[in-house]
Image (tube, rainbow, N blue to C red):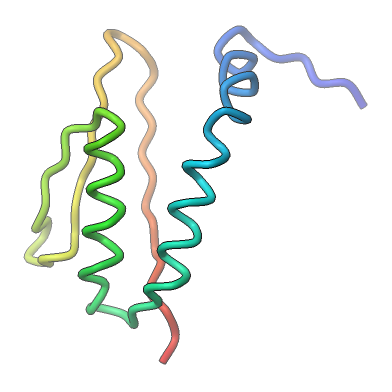
Length: 91
């Protein structure tokens, strides 16, 4: 089966291999921190710091949760993407 990609999809596919080390760093850190629900302070702080380092504007303390955050990256009139991440560990 062949995929037909539009230019933005093609650009994303070409950029993915270079981002692999960063994705592995984040995945490994969240796994190792393994904080249960509503105590993800170190995990959220780590992810927010990575996003800042990557050029995102980060707002913390969302919706009354100290570990809640929002990260925004402006790219002119580019597409908007929203992600909700749940990465709390089981007790």
